[in-house]
Image 1 (cartoon, rainbow, N blue to C red):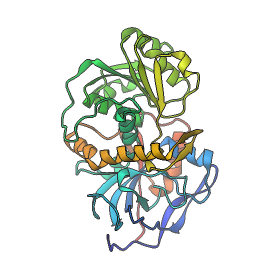
Image 2: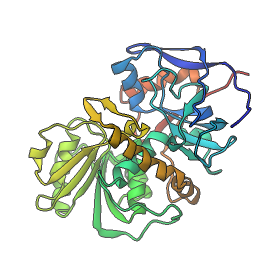
Image 3: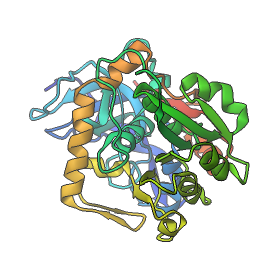
Image 4: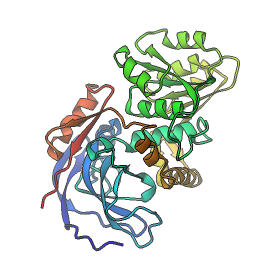
Length: 367
C-alpha cells in the first residue's frame, strides 16, 4: 500500500457518444484493493481504440488501451511482486467501462496486465507493448489456440531453427505480427510472413525466414505449394479474406491450427476441413464473462485466460526477453502534441495511414 499523493482530478479523453470524445477534467480512478494505480507517462494507439469509439461509443468511458508509466499506489490485497515506483507497461479495456481507460493521466489496472520494464526500454517505446505482446503470447502459446512450446522465462537467445516446425504469420508487419514473429523464432520456428515487401528486411531482422507479398492474390497458394507440411498460422489482420487465405495456405493432408484476432466466417471450415480455427480476444484475460463482436466467453474460460496471462507476467519472461534483446518492442513512432493530439493519431489508424509502426504519445501531467 502507498501513501503517494494523487490528485483528485485528472485530464482524460472521455467518450461523448459514437465517434465523439473530449479531453476533459474527470475524477482520478480509485485504486482497487487487488490492483495498482499507475501514473501514465506515455500511451500507445491500437485499432481497437478507434473501433471502440466508433462502434460502441459508451458515453462517459475513458478511451485507450496501452500505456507505460510508474506505479504510485498498490492495493492492500494486491498479490504481486511489483512495487510502488516500478516502471511498467500494460493494457486495460478502455472505452468500455466507466473509469477504465489509458488515455488519461492515471489508470487503475490489475497486475496480471502489467510487465515490469527493463532500463533499456524507455516509456515512449514501452507504451506500445501491452495489447500486441500479450495477444501474440496468448495466441501462440495457450494450448487452446496454437499451443506451441514457449521459450523459458530466462532464455536469452532463440532456440535452434527447426525447419520442420513452421508458422505462417499473416500481416507480419502489424503490431501483433511483429511480436508473433519474434516469439515464434525464439521458440525455434521457421517463420513465413506476409507483408509489404518494403518491410522485408525489417521483418527478417525480427526472425522471419520468408516474406511473401500480401498484395499477391496467389500468396496463399504460393505458400501452400512451397510448404505442403505447414500446419500452424496466426492471422494478425483477420479482415478482407485473410483468414480464408491462411486456411488455403495450410496443409490439405495434415490437421492444422489457425488463430485469428477477429471473428471468422462459419464458412471458413469449408475452405480447408483440416483446419481448426480459434478466435482470440485479449479482453477475456480480465477474468470475467465477455460478449464482444457476437462471441461469448464463459466465466470459466475467462478465468482460465486470466490465469494463463498472470502466470506469464509473474514469471517476468517478457521483462527478461526485452532486457536480453531476445525480443524487441514494436517499431514505434513517437508523435508530438501530447495528450491533446491523440484523436489525430486515431484518425490516422482509422484511415489506414499507419503501416509497420506503433504510434505513441506522451502524457504531460499537470502539476
